[in-house]
Length: 359
Image (cartoon, rainbow, N blue to C red):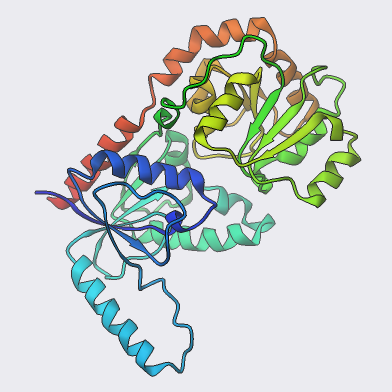
């Protein structure tokens, strides 16, 4: 029996949450021949949609523009009933914690991390996410956790959870077709991603002003352009000459960045997995990362670790990451790291979960 799955595709509609879009795009692309997918969108997608996937209106998320629009309310009600009828016997899988349109619908929830529960006091957006995530997890029939570390966090936070948890590590093959020659005269340090509170970017900026930071190795920041406030923070530490902001990059541009820098630095206080670690590893860019459970799980012996609360520890680890000794150790261990991860494996785990729920 072919699984019938409705994907609520909110992450396809936003420029943010690129890593989550990547997960669903890679998995759905590999399984669309074996799964009957319906992707629910409330607007034009901002990212590519996998081939072989049917698109329908996410009417449950489409706001009614005027509450006194009686005809519009009636049309929306009818559309909701059509959606409920079409999806009632299908599996519901939201990309970001939206509830099924049918109360009794079989429900798969992907949990990327438990950061919102830990850092909600410092970030109002994370507080809203924490509530949505908690509700989604409590209603789930099956939970996909992107690492064993995340699975442990889920178990610790939701002690009365009935849903089965399946671990689904992520992949890196999206960079495989980004042809770029490995540069022999690499220099500099690379940071990739957004800079929300738990990403700990401020401590990295502090580290660039430490006397332990390696001379001649500037920090390149890939992701949203630094704001005026962030530049003022950088200038307060006298690091303007050491930091360059490139803005977002395509896969091909990112591959070139990984391959032209001595090491990649990831100072997060908490993560669920860390795709940039396996991206950097594939591109042969030495990972220098926080000593946190998820990163220990993902990178193993192929990374250099630091205390993310200590700028001098960060600077010292970055300095070590630029040495030939670090590269020799990295080259010896990196293949064992990469062999644990692939989008093909992730897709098979998801397919197995759908088939299990369809019986």
